[in-house]
Structures are given as structure tokens and as C-alpha cells.
Image (tube, rainbow, N blue to C red; front, top):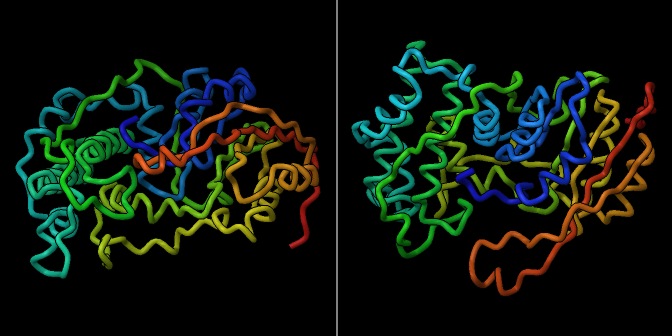
Length: 347
């Protein structure tokens, strides 16, 4: 994974899969997939995987991690390696990323946004345009599109002039941001179980009683749609109206209820209660809005609950000051076994 992502489960993914266990015939749903660390581990363990995230960028990065060379042959562009070669050779284009997220933004506004150098921003625009043209022309399929977009997101992130998220840019160019952007091919597994993707509200995921669902909701007030807005714009390939010093795209339609302290506990209980799957796992931590005992009590209303300690991990630390002030947090996994006919909470 080339994107530092708040709440990533990369460090505890083995402990999570140890609790999930071996494939049992159902589908494993990674319903807040983020960048797909847990989905990838489940796929490698033999599970059929479905990824979902309300951010299209996250869902695409997740699907790319569980896509095999069978699903993504890239026959229409001469193979995966050739596709990467052609992307890196793309002619730069003065498009939306260049116009809004490089110093070129000063030509039509009050601020020179230093997320990317002008050269790198033009290359991002050119490569994203080429991927879109290939897809519209039928030269690549949906899975192949996700792989290439995810590769481009990783490349953009490596040269982004940020502290790790995209709430704002740094005032001085960092060494990595002055390097030339380069898309790097990933190692696609030769085979993998079927993988599918949606990008939408978590309450709308389509699962069955025999499936296993994993929830990794936001724990704190950080709204991912605002923190990763540029990655979302690259993934969607659109041109939203942006504003402010940071040039943040409209995001409040994707605001997560789980980020609001007064609403999170009830929302999580309703989420698990409304899920059709009888076997549900929910990640949480001592950094979260909801105390673990309160969350355990609420979840007990909808099924039998076991609480598993996973690990002590560091807080998200985007810079040196945060690292010095950081403390350890306790990651836990709730395992909920729901009855065949679960009690539905009153509306």
C-alpha cells in the first residue's frame, strides 16, 4: 500500500484473520474497506471478498489489492507491464489537478496550492485522462481500471507535498514532492477468489445470513471525505467546485455519522442490528468516541458478543510534533454472533 491511511489495520490484520477463521462458503464483506489491508488478507486466506467504502478512491484501492491477473489481463493494452509503461510515457496535460492543486491555482485565485509541483500535476492529469479514455473505449475493464487508478493514487501520494493527509499542503516543498511522479506496477496474484466492489453507504451493503461481515468504522471526528479529497477527485476523474486554502471538494454528503460523538454508539448498534449476516466483526479502539463497555453493552442487544484484544498501536502521527505527543491505543475486535431471527431495534 502506498497511501498512509488513518486507521489502517495493516499492523493487526493477522490477528483479525485469526479470529475470522477459514472460508466457510460465504463471502467476506470488508464494509469500511479503507485501503484494503483486511480484504487482501481475507482473499489470500481463500475467502470470496466484497469491498465497500463510501469513498470511491478507497474502494478502488481495496479492489486493486484483491484483483488477480485472471480478472485483470490487460489484453486490450498489451498486458499490465505495457500499460504501466504507456502511462508513464503519457504527455502532460494542464487539467483540473494542475489548475487547482499546484501553484498554477494562483493564476485564478488567491493562493498557490502546493500539493503537487506543476510538472507532476500535469502528469497526473494526463495519466488519469488516458485511463478514462482506455475505459470508455473498451480497452480495459472495470477491474483493470481500478488497478491502474489505484496505481496512480499511490504514485501521486508518493510525491504529494503533505504531512500524510490532504487537509492542506505544506508551505515548503519536501524532497519527495520534487521527485518526478512514476507509476509502479504491483504484483498481481496469479489467481484469487472472486472479488467485487461497491462504493456507497455501509448500511446498503447486500449480504446474506451465511456471509461474514467486517466493520471498521471511523472512531473519531476525522472525516475521511475531507482528509482524502484529492485522492477522491483523481479516482472519480471529475472537476468539482473547490474552495478555501486547501481547495477541498464538497464532502458533507459523505460525512460519517460514526464521526460524531453523540451519535456514534446508537449508529453502530443499529448498523450491526440491520446487517443480515449472522457473523459480524467490528474493530474499535480506546481512542474511539464510544467507550468499549458502552459499545459492548449496546451490541449485546443484537447478539452474543466476545471482545478480543488485538494489539497496542501508536496513534496516527502525521509529523514529528504528533509523534512526540503520541501515546499508545488499544485495538480490539468485537465478534458478534446474531440469532437466526435477530431482534430489530425500534426506529
